[in-house]
Amino acid sequence: MVWNGNDNSEAVAGLAAGYDFDLGDTLFAGPEVSAEKILDDDTRVSFGFGGRVGAKLGEKGRLFVASTWQTKPCAGCEEFVTLGGGYQHKFAGNLYGKVEYRHLFVGDGFPDADTAFVGLGMTF
Image (tube, rainbow, N blue to C red; front, top):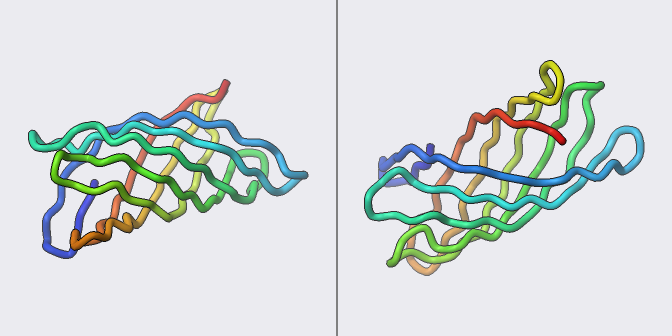
């Protein structure tokens, strides 16, 4: 879900891939790439390039902050940077779930926006 200060909100679908490097027993960091589409006819896929850093919470949890640079989501839009955080929890086997919030710093006269995601993923 993406929303801005004008009470506009839209659903978002996307994919992400990344790799976490262990930084000792309790910390991790890694790069991430993503492709996201606001589910509106006037938008296109926005590609993100960034990373995350965080703390391991036991064997199954990861709390993190993340940032990306995103390409333009529509012809009249601008590129933007995101900053946010989330929590990832490992379920059985390689399956995990995650919740994440990010603030979009748009600029150039466009209003900033916010996104919230819930996702399922697999580790390899």
